[in-house]
Amino acid sequence: MIKVVIIGGGNLATHLYQTLSLADHIEVIQIYNRNLKHLKFVQDPELAISDSAKIKDADLYLLAIKDEAIAEFAENLSGKDGIIAHCSGSQNLNQLSKMKNYGVFYPLQSFSKDKPVNFKKIPICIEANNTANLKRLKEIAHQISDQVFEVDSEQRKALHLSAVFVNNFTNHLFTIASDYCEENELPFNILLPLIRETVAKIDTLPPYSAQTGPALRNDQKTISAHLEMLNPDRKKIYTILTESIQKVHGKKL
Amino acid sequence: MIKVVIIGGGNLATHLYQTLSLADHIEVIQIYNRNLKHLKFVQDPELAISDSAKIKDADLYLLAIKDEAIAEFAENLSGKDGIIAHCSGSQNLNQLSKMKNYGVFYPLQSFSKDKPVNFKKIPICIEANNTANLKRLKEIAHQISDQVFEVDSEQRKALHLSAVFVNNFTNHLFTIASDYCEENELPFNILLPLIRETVAKIDTLPPYSAQTGPALRNDQKTISAHLEMLNPDRKKIYTILTESIQKVHGKKL
Image 1: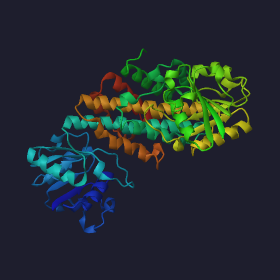
Image 2: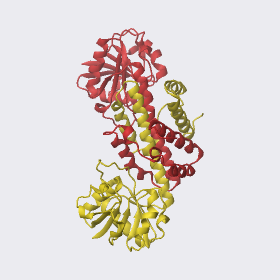
Image 3: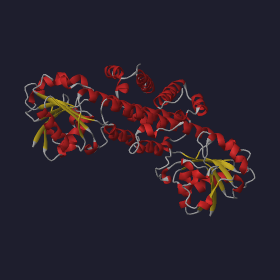
Image 4: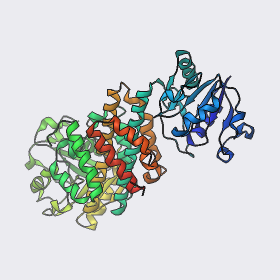
C-alpha cells in the first residue's frame, strides 16, 4: 500500500481525501489542518490531526494548501524521505527545492465543496525533481485518474492561465448574460441548451472552426444594434471581444 | 395535417426540414430556394422549388433566410392566408406587418450543417400578430420541441444578444486558450474536462455563485503573473474581464 498524508482542509483536500481513500493501492494515513474544524469531512477521526509535529512517515505528502503557504509549510516536512508534492497550478516546482524528494500533483479542475467529482476524467499534471519520483507520482496519479500528463512548471503556469480563460472568464460571460436576461424578464435557463451545444461542438471541432456570430460575419448592423442595447461596462467587453474575434479570424476591422 | 413551406437553404432551413418532416402532424409541402443547388438535402426532389411564383398555399411559411432578405421576400407571400413567420433572433415582428397573418418562430440554438440536432430540447421563441396566430404557432412548435416560449420582439433581441455572450464570446475564449496551449506545446484537450465542469456547474448553481478564480479572490499576485505571460491583445481581454468580475462581485479594484 502507498501511504499518503494530505495537508489542507479546503475543497481540493476534501476531494483528494475522498478519492484517494477509495483507491485500491493507496492508504490515506493522516490529514493535517491547523484547525480540526475544517477536517469534519474525515470519516475516521483518528486520521485528522492539527499538530504538524505528529505527521507520520509516508510515501507521499500532498500539499493541498494556499499558494502562499506551500514553501513555509514544507519546512515542517524537510526531514521526511517521502515525496512532498504541492497541488498548485501556478507555483514552481522549485518552491519545494529544500526537500529531499519533491514534485507537483496538480489536478486541472474547479472543485466545489458539495459537488462530487469523478477523478477518473480529471487531468492530473505531474512534475518531479528526478525521474524516479516522476515515475512514482505518475503511478500514484494513475490510481485515481485515466488522464495523467507530464507537465513542466512553465507549461503548468500556461495551463493555469488558460483555465482562467475557459473557466473563470467563461463563467463571468454566463453571469453577464444571466443578469441581462433577468433585466429583460427572461429565464436564464432558456440559454442552457445553447451553452451545452457551444461546449459539445468543441468535442468534434477546434474552437477556431466552431466560431459563428456577427463578429465573424463582420455584420456591422447587428453589432451596432447590440452595442446600443448594452450599458458601458458590457459595451466595453462586447467591443473588445468582437475586435479580438475579427483580428484572430483575419476580418477587416 | 399542418402544411408547411420552408424558405431557405442554409443550416437552419436544413434542420427545420429534417425535423418538421418527421413530426406526426406536419407535412412539409415545399422548400424554396433561389438556387436549387442549395436544396440537395431535400429527400423528395419534387418538393424543392426555385420559382417563388410556384409557392403553394400552406398553413405556415417559415422564412429561414438572412435578416436583410426577410421583408423583401415576404412580399412574394403577401396574398397568402397562412401564417408567415421569420426565424430571426434580431428582427422585429413588424418586418412582416404587410402580411395578413404573421409571426416569429425563432429556435434559440447554433446550428451546424453536418451536426444532427435534437429539436426536442431547443427553445423555440414564438411571437405573432394576434392571439389566434400565437396559439397556432405554439401548437406547431410543440410538435417538434418541449421548450416553447412566448417572447416579444424586444425580449427576443435581448436573448439574441445574450447568445452572443454565451456562445460566440465563450467560443472565442476557448479559441484563445487553444492557441495559447498550442504555443506552449500543450494539448487543448487537457482543458475539456474543466470546460465541461464549468457548464455542468450552472445546471445547479446560478453563474454568479459559481464564480471562482484570481479576480474573485482579488489575488493580485496571480493576476500580475498572468498579465506578464500574455501578449497585448490577450492582456486587454484579461484585464477587462478581471475588472468586470471584480465590479460585478463588488470587490475592490
